[in-house]
Length: 318
Image (cartoon, rainbow, N blue to C red; front, top):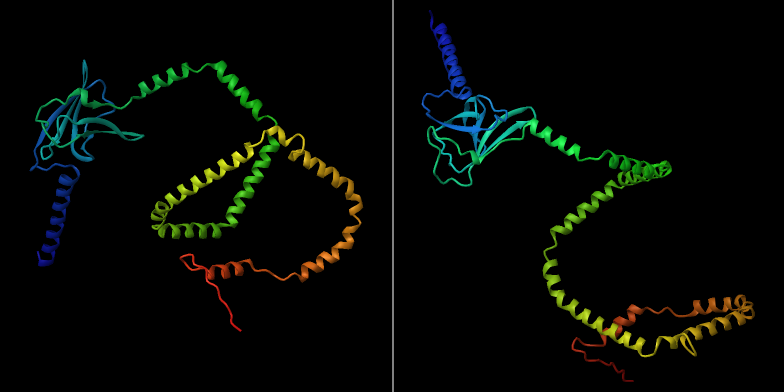
């Protein structure tokens, strides 16, 4: 045997040994260096548990179910747990299904890591175990629920829905068209909506000033509310100064408006011919009226007053 063949056989042997070691230790979890403790659980039913079901501690697998045996008073489940993990006796024990297909597992959920801890051969307290609802129990509850439904009530309910929806074909078509138009509008405005959300995000990133500003404006809003309340009180006092009947009788507002309306109805026909005659005059007067810039007048008025309220006059000497 030459050197190349010896090296090849050595490499094949090394790969074979590593593969067997990985399958034994990593997959089958047969590590001779590890030691285990055995614990038992007594259940009313197995809840779908079987041998080799995983045992978890806060989501970490710490052991397996070694045996599930039926007894006269229920089911005995024997657990094999790695002794490197300490499981508090006061832990809640939950039997759950990994998926809708079953695949049950046992999980210990301790409130904290304090002892005492499970020892070899110890029985898990039955009052700490929560088992899943079985298909039989679920079916029984479903039957109980169905028995509480009265066919007459359901028939009347369906009949009411039928009468309520009858003759609504036109309305449904209108809703369909409006929904289609709304979707089309949103799709056509997608860039604008995207810009809107982007602008809102930009505003949200520069909104640190809002809190202090609102805090500073709070007293001002309070003063505004008090002043507004005074205005309302004064207005109500003005309205309540005279009885309500005065506005409708004698020379009250309503009587005055009625008299004014009657006068306009009387002189309206005679004033109508004056409209075409006065229109050119009014239009020419409007064109000749100089333009008044209110903002300029306000600026000039403000420039004549100092910040402390002192009024300044400018006198030209000839």
